[in-house]
View 1 (tube, chains in turn cyan, blue):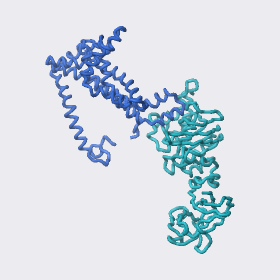
View 2 (cartoon, rainbow over the protein chains, first blue to last red):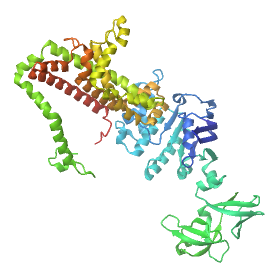
View 3 (spheres, each protein chain N blue to C red):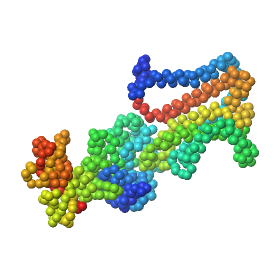
View 4 (tube, rainbow over the protein chains, first blue to last red):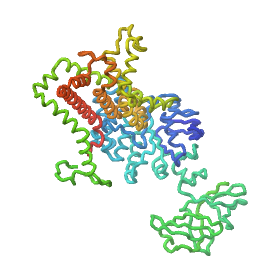
Length: 349
Length: 285
């Protein structure tokens, strides 16, 4: 099902949670709403679901305006961050809830409900736990029950609020892969909220990056990672270093060093900011070309050695990751080096 | 936890706070002196009557009628309080309105008022020439001096129990559960009946049980409004007092023992229902 948000505005008291958001989601897409806390991503998800009402704007399902429609008429599958399982019901009763509460004309027979619940229990790999109560399950199992319960009503769209937020790292990885397969095999349209960029980039077809109630950028994981459009996205994704610089006549100058720009800089003269990711910096001998710097720290307890260097001219600290075979081992604190940027982007200001 | 083990050590669980023996010892001593000792004296007293004498005292139409009145009115009042107490707790938790704190404070008044004062006030109000009573008389409804009057007095004194036990549980109720059930297609009535009510049921049952227990033992407010007509509106506690006034201590104690036994059984049943209502909690231990 296609889903659109048009000019969504939402304020809580004096706090503007969403300041006019437009979003277009195609049928079958797997979309991540990514942003720091307070960026409005959960508010947007709740408005799409109909759990909250927007102050302005429209939500369209298949070009049909959903504003003012009751929650139960929207048929959205919503998975809450803390699962929101009914703890006085067994796992099977939880999953069958959405079918049992249907008006008697639409309600499946008891046998049909049971068959559907068994099918969903198999789908979420909890076949033998149907008689348990939620308090007897682990976090990952509860999350899968919540998912099965949302899928039972055959939702037109599946909305997940920080679906892996409360799980430990190992379970999170497994569940992530499993959800991706589920999304593909069931041909769902799914939207999930996360503050974890790795999760968003790995799982989604389309990443929506939000900041302070506005959408910063929408694109595939490759687009948002490799072609960030705003300074916020540069810093939020991949932890890019911010390097203040001067632009004069198409030439970028950091401190007193002119650095060769890998791409055409067609910016007006004036101050700018260069964004460069840790892995796009290389370290060379102090006599070589590049920006002079001093090694501050070397961290070797990670897959790639990380080095913190300070630029001599501006006393700005940069994070650098080195390929493992490069001279990470011989670097010592206080050593003079030069740094070169294999790739960077410059934005004005 | 293994209950079979014979030593103290395996009974108790490891805990950061010591003091299991001390507190258990204190609990047993305290309950022994404050609760069990008077009850034991009460149970022993009718023994002077012998088994036959005991039954002859209790098995009279007047005593049986008074027990019926006492337990019947207490049960009706507790059930009514269960319904309306829940509504009051709901309103106080769910909505914001001017004067909410004042209304919240009103709920406790039946606790604070001397019961005799409540009884006299209710009687004046509901007597055939009272404010409310005069309105009801044309319809042939008599409240004061009938079992209906007793029920009203018992509703009055039992209300705070239900409100105060349900209120905190309702306050803690996770609104995500409501949202989840609504998003799954449940109507408002279904959300309340299938999700909210089962969650607050243990607390509601506790409140009803407390209101019931209080109502069975109530004396002060009832005797004014009841009219105390034997076989009709005479409560068992009044019969006990009148026996005491005739220095028939054993007879008074006999009725009291029967009341005690019935109350105990009813509270036990309520407790079992309550345990069933929370069967899903900690059931893996």
